[in-house]
Image (cartoon, rainbow, N blue to C red; front, top):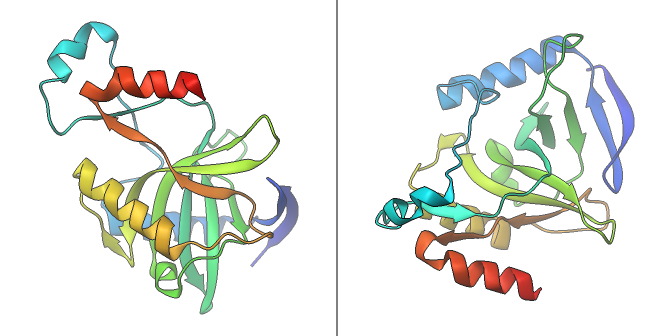
Length: 193
């Protein structure tokens, strides 16, 4: 495998250079999900719809943040546990996105094909974080699209299956979600911090 050592967040990572390996990884994820994970979209609603949206029980809200959206893919390559960051963007020079191998510590079973969508950002204190937003695969199985179930499973994985060590490039947290009727209290809580 053709790799290049790079600085990544607060540690080092290995940039995969081989397009065939990138193609195989993206195709593998695509076949498990049934869609191309690099073609995601998000919905944002204005405040004028809030009274209608508050009547829905299954809609959750979160804060808008400005990190770099990526996938964290836990898999095995040649029977070795590997944590891969798959960046969402491509450019005219590269047919496939950047894929970077980074040192992360998860429970052994998580490396059987776990795919987490989130964003990487740096705080004012210059520490790096990965805010996990959605779980797509666990042990090569698709996860429920129900928001509460998905976030509950994601919390369980991060709380009991993730181990932060000094060599990790970032701390992993689950992004804070709340029901629409809790918007004002969540904003008040945020403004206190």
